[in-house]
Image (cartoon, rainbow, N blue to C red; front, side, top):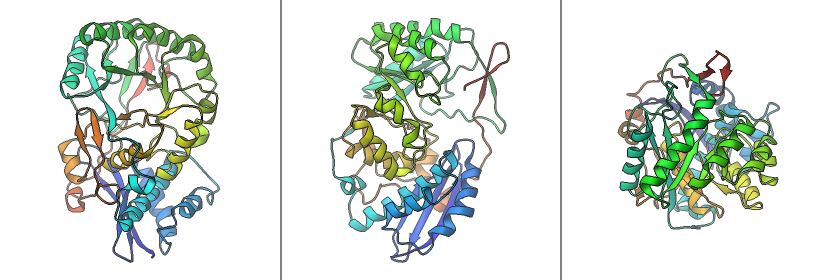
Length: 402
């Protein structure tokens, strides 16, 4: 069995996606996601110029060897562009192998560890009461877990405040939008939001919150401590994790569970965080961390330290990644939760999929492979549109973390 072609497909049904389709000489094909929000064309170039030529003629069943070839065989390793390209190849090859076996991917990985994948939705509001109402809508839809984000008084364009009730796309312009951040106002407001949510909805909903790398470690410790009375499921991305030891300082000050990792590329980005038990959930993704092959290694390592998975699942990841993640989540023993931002109807039409939502859980379906396909004719009707994520500055003009 040989790979005879590999094609990169770029489409924008509401936002940009990069898809790799690998075709074999036996008529079986697989697809993988290589989307990198705001940097899609960088991945396209890397795939077309450096990866695809190396795949032709290889045996697609040798997934591990091809992964090592693309990672270990390259002198310049890691990074978001390289690892997303590897992930696209890896997911497409797992798709092919599961289709050849005539079984859903979770069976090929070892079978089900659970009957459904608990997911959390995004409740966003321009102010506190809008967020309270948004949480109520998710409760009514059956969600057991909900991430709550709100506009902060005195801060325009606060992170997480979407432009719709279910769909939120932060990449909003051909050049980066500049936003302003005020840490003090945020730290004073956030505990009040969750106090209000507990007053309205009681102790049952699992509530989550994304800080989005905005705080220093000691500020994050203060926030986590102030949120302890409201029993958060987790506090996400409390501080940038380039210095993994920074989470040790946060741990000294709060027992609020910590989650991080959606921008991680390899196990090396989270090795110290995990082995020193500085986090409770690892949020690395199928597409960001080198595909199923490498994310499985991260999850197995995390299991040794009772760290659970909580994979990123925003709309910057295509349904290909979501479908693959659900098979991974269904299998992985140390599963925690899965983020689920709903895609637009246009995106769902371009990427027909087998996964379904019911009563707060996603189910991957039983189709052979990862259960997600691409309608190439429909995809061609949505050409690429340049779109950048915003940037943030402090009130005095200093560049900050968005």
